Image 1 (cartoon, helix red, strand yellow):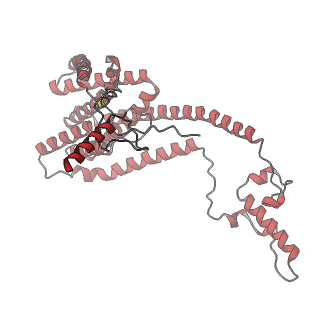
Image 2: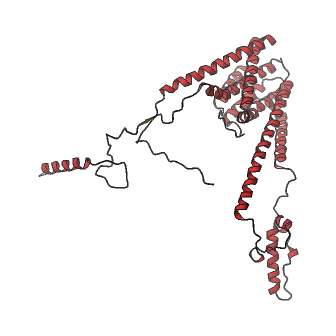
Image 3: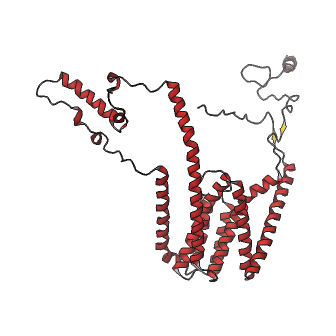
Length: 400
């Protein structure tokens, strides 16, 4: 009996599996839960569905972000060596850097003004469209909000008018029902100052002027803080050997290059914290090897401008002007190449010109080799998608 039942179960199971399999869970099928249809399993197999072949010149343009930052680090190192060897004045270095930072801030403020000018007409059109769709803002009757239609429009727009008007309506209602001898609330007994004691007075400066004032305050605060900390920073690593300082600062600058945020978003935000902190720490330990507090102050301020402010301007420049971004790349590469060749050889103008030529050629060749190498690696890409992968939700954009 047991053998006959087994055969019948096997035949019934085979007959059930002859049905058409559907990958659906909301109705019962004559298949087990872990059933795999071997005939249709690989029908929906996809290889590299989101594959986009790289283009040579687009990769070259993307590599300019890395080249700019590496060139900035090289310029900073060459400036420190020149200051340490007393070949240039630290005041001249930080003076030219501050002047360039001021020009960059003026250009950035001009871009912000253009953005506000572009946003203002769009905001006005949206407001006009909403008013047209609603048919205007009707004046509420006195019994619904305590507002008198005969009140001038200027009084309604001032702060605290609605609260004052509602208090006046309550006072008039209570005066009609109160008895003699009971104090009543009059409209003049409630003022804007009594109702809104914590409201800050409106500033006479525009938002852009307030932002400019805040920028100037921040600059003065950094300047004063560095002036006060320069004597302390000068004696920070007095008990440490110079070889340890050179090795430690080299590793910190390598961390700055490795962890820098090379994204090309137009938002003007601060660079990555690890990258910025490592660069500022490297400049601090390097500045402690300089002979005077003036040298320490100049190098510290120069490092803040190079590693803190300059990346913001570079990101904004790439978003606003691609040609300006390319021109800045050429200036940085030529300056870094010439300065590095002068530091290594100890030469003068001829060495600087030779460094500009050799540095530019080396940078262009390195960018081309890296671009072709990345293009060649694409043939090894093998990303497989199939029905066994989890479903990817399709998120629609937010409805306005």
